[in-house]
Length: 167
Image (cartoon, rainbow, N blue to C red; front, side):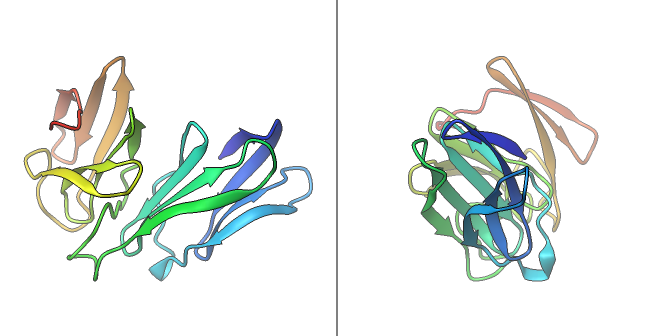
């Protein structure tokens, strides 16, 4: 993913070992954070929200990084993971790429739990089990359409929703 940080283009690369920001011209590393991904299973796309990057994966949970806008540096805000892929904390996305809006993160956890998290802490605000079947690898694709979120689930259903911290 290409982003703009401190007035420069930065290539965000998420590997099985790190989340990193690179100079796209020469590959020089500006910043990187260890986020070792079990089995290299990182499918969802890193999400840029204002001056933060959020990533989430099935086995390892979530990581939020704040990008410095005055220099090509970054700092970890929080990282959350559960005991395992069944006993999760925060968000363990598989294929779903989370969306962030108004200080809340929305995504689908490892077994189909649609969740809302506090952006600041990663704490779970709510969980819903009706949007998708509770199965391993369950998924919803989100598309923002104005104030609505269109959710396409694995049953071929289109759910037109308005996600809020109230549910």
